[in-house]
Image (cartoon, rainbow, N blue to C red; front, side, top):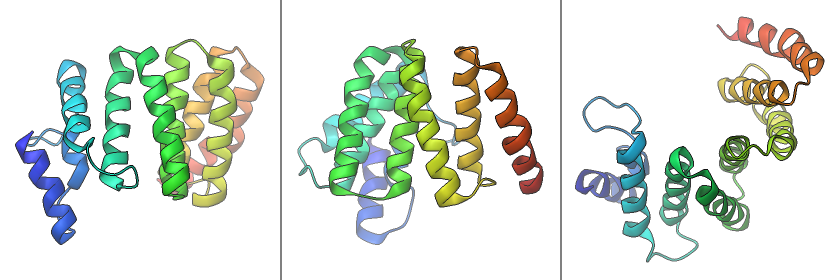
Length: 177
């Protein structure tokens, strides 16, 4: 926890280091935390920065980290946190990529909860905006397209799924490799 706090402080003061991402990755190997460790650090991160103003970017990022960590084991508790984080992103930081990232995580949470119809709508929106803002061959857009395919398959929309893979995702992935 102390290393993560120092990383955020270093980033705020000098704009160097990993910043808030240090709450999500192992200090030694760089892999993302998961399970109980991820959940504990998500709560610790949120409690560390909760006292900051609503307009503080680190506080907003901490809320997102908490929501993402809850999603692994408690998706029903994660959804309101993730939705509040999205609302804060829209209100204070209109950065399109942050908003798309928050929507991507909400889409995954909705799928975990078996709410694939809602996830489908959100995933379509995220993919379309990703194509428009980053291009079809960007890594994030390809991931969003893959997420859309997974949701289409969960809803047994096979033809649309095959079409998306065949006509958009595979050609884009081949170009970008």
